[in-house]
Every structure is written in structure tokens, then in C-alpha cells.
Length: 204
Image 1 (cartoon, rainbow, N blue to C red):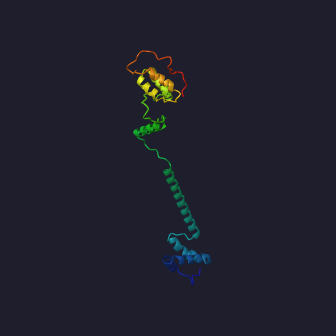
Image 2 (cartoon, one colour):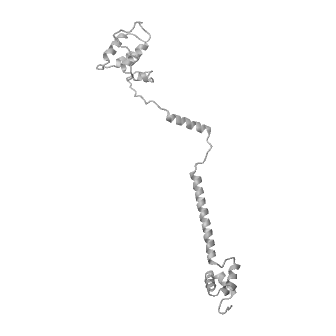
Image 3 (cartoon, rainbow, N blue to C red):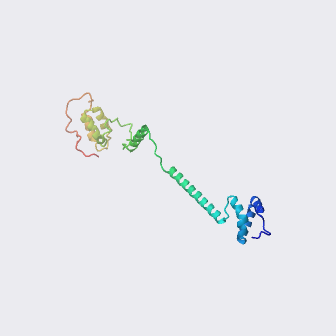
């Protein structure tokens, strides 16, 4: 092996320490042109510093490391997304659970629509009854008349205005119970001329 005109091992040591790029270029050159010189002078320097003299192997190792790093990063992101998007089981306070049930029941309960209030209309304690609610004003008066609530009956009979088909019947009732009150009953049966409330009537 001729070393004439070629750098010595000591020179390559200096190249390796001070100009790594130049060292790599020279190593690649002699690896192809003079493999014997390369193996005896340059390769030992590379091995002594813990590096392989196979550039392809270095690149392969770097690729493996990068691939493993990317795989770990993707796995970490996937786990993070899983834990964020998956609902966590939480311990529910019994009181909070009961309050939630009450609120749900309140929202699902069917509520009766609010009735319009009329200041001219007397208070009707039977307004909660669907049957009485569906009655006409005359029929409500007859209902109270049959119950002996004459004062309340008068109020409803008085609401039937002239021109209403029930006006004449309402007037007959007013005359029948004129002077009577809830505490004063004459004991007489209603006149046959006074129409009576039909208990089997169809709701209007």
C-alpha cells in the first residue's frame, strides 16, 4: 500500500476534529479510489469515534429513528384526542340527581292553557272543571241555580245580553229567583216554564 502524497492518519485526525465536512469528502474519495488505504488509515479513525464507516447505514439508522419518533407522536396525539372526546364517568350527587328529575318532570307535565281573565266576569270556583268550562253563560247560571247558589246564578243570568238566543230563558230564571239568596230558599220547585240543564247534553 503506497501512502505517498496521501494524508497521514494524524492529518485525518485533525480533519475529523476541525473540518468534518472535508474529512467526509476525503474519506468518500479514498473509499472508492484506494479501499486498502481507506481501511488502514481512515476507517479506524471513524470507528474510534463511535461512527460507522457506512454512510448508507447511518442514513438507515436516522430513518428508523425518525419513523419511530413520528409513530410515537401520532400515537400520543390519538390517545390525547381519545381521552378528550370520550365522556368521563363522574360521580353524581344524589341531591343533584333528584333536582334534575324534578326539573324534567316539570318540563314534561302537560299544563292547561291559561284562561283569559275578564274583570266583568264573576269568580267561578268550578272553572277547573272541563264540564263547567264548556258550558254557555246560561248553562252555568242553571248549574248554580240547581245547586241553590242563587247569587252566583243571578250573576251569570245577568251576563246574557239582549239579542242572545238565551236572553229570554235567562230573564225567566231571573224572575224565578228574584229576591232569593243562597240563605233564603222558598222551597218551591222551579217553574215548568224555566228551562232545566240537561245532564246528558253534549259538551260544546
